[in-house]
Image (cartoon, rainbow, N blue to C red; front, top):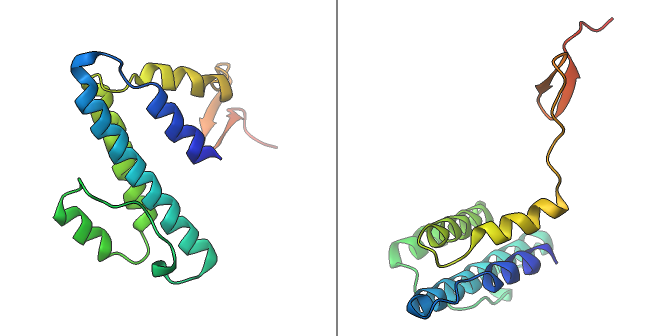
Length: 135
């Protein structure tokens, strides 16, 4: 559900400018292929079945060296695919293909910012702690 929602938001917030439609289609096709790969490899890991049992969309459009690198990996495939998705999104946001501000604002609605700590509190690891010594 979360990956589908994220992918559909990225596609929905693409530019509608006529001069960017070629780049928008390339972004959407590449994103769909990478998300398919990510889901396929994740299902493979949680099911303990052979990778050949799961099908993903063609990886056309990715360079040969990247595909060879991915195929040589046994354990980090989801992390690699996720990094590729993140890089794709950032690169396309920079050139105006996707409107990432719209995506960020929808994310903020779900995950409110952390509260600002008082001067007697400071951030330690995953939570705010008092700076006063514990007794």
